[in-house]
Length: 451
Image (cartoon, rainbow, N blue to C red):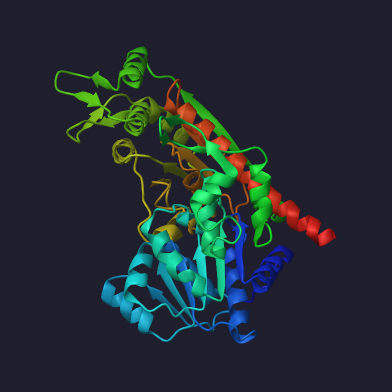
């Protein structure tokens, strides 16, 4: 198949070619994979600038999306690629294969650094935001060697999923600290002040006045942003909160646990939480209808969310739906009432897109990246929510992407008066921060073009 880039895609190709180190902050569905491959092909065969490229991606994207795109498009089908996954011996064999591109999953980055000579002259990080933790082993391993590359490209649709503190590790991998500082400490001192704290313990940091625009300005020369609504003829997307009323006894126990961090459900079952994170985790489970006890057993509390899910599925009138769950016991509970399917292979993706799967059950982390599911349905139901804006947006974008021709409906089943309401509010606040970053980059580039 021949690739004829849209104007915005050609802009992306040119951006990569013109910037040795750059970030492409693109929404899902805009074609960043093929755009990057076109640029890579030109850098190898026209510019004669690079010859050995490393692509780091989520596992499904590494094994499926990148190889599929290379095979699909005539302009890049001659690129030789090797997928570096599997057992250590299989990975080593893949690295020893003569190729232009080596595609590895991000979980194996540390292994790669420890077991292979760094001889790549270009590195592409697909889902750059998965390197947002400066304490993670894969970030620490990659930062040692990525500076040796002539070219680095970072791809992500969620550059600041939890706020602007997430930007420093990602930008460091692109420019080795040239724009936001050599250390996260300096970045923090320059742009942030302590937020919530307890004595010497600081739980989070908030930007000082004017910091956001200064941060955006600092990275705008190497980052390009694009939102699908600006470039694609996309249908609308609607978010619908379905408030579920829990009975008074459950709410009473919920409030007691929220206040005291301990509650006795029966003579044999007591819930205890030792810190704020554990309390939030248990509260979310209670809202969903089941909770893990101290003995790792599942205590069933109510079916209010399950009943609401049934109402939504019935109202879909046979249309396929994707149901996202938060905990394993959510999955088990849903499966006890409904016949569901889960994606285990590329064949399951095909079945969904052909309308053969009425209820697709998934954890957002399992299908958050790289899967094209827009042809199989338009309805998403969040049975259990996630605090992660990145997972939330990526999961929703499985249906809301190029090729979708119907309004996408995203339902949130929310326990009234529970932590679910706080999670939704947090997601909206994080989204506002991230949208501000992307909007700034877009306006900056457009203003430069007018000059």
